[in-house]
Image 1 (tube, rainbow, N blue to C red):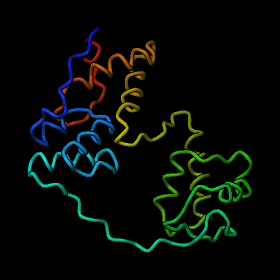
Image 2: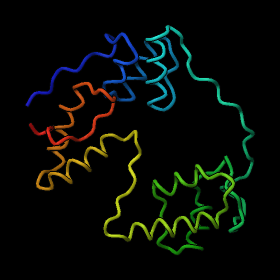
Image 3: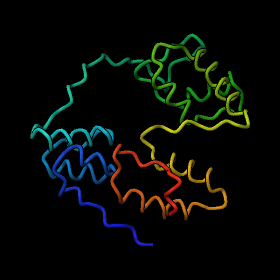
Image 4: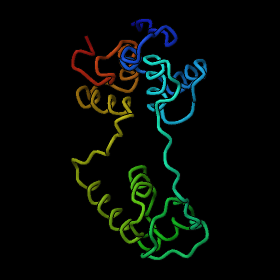
Length: 199
């Protein structure tokens, strides 16, 4: 099977057209740089920046985030207790790992879901974090449990949906069909599994 030739990003004229296609972050960053736009940030921030430029000719569509005072709490060295609040300077350090192993057991491991919870729950305490970790582990013990896939991770979601529908197939099949899928535009800008993908 030969994948259709994907439209070149530098030939696209409108933001709506740009958003119909699947782009790697590296491609978006290179195009932003070519257009003289800021090329750093999250993938969809860069996508929105280019789309805004194509539609308006304006180079900046993102209002600067208000500066917040960064906490000086040192997560590497400060003593940690269950009452310690999460700060905007939080980091997954060995100091934090030792705290969790002490309070949750030697089997404690950071995972993506728990790290995201720590990042987005400023003000909650390490006791709250311990309770959340235990709740996550309880959910994971359910045989029907499936980890959450973030909306931006289309390939992982596609893989899960594809293999659920075709358990007799494997990752080589997923990658082959995915390559064909993302070489075509999508009305919504998302590339999701459909039963017709194997046609």
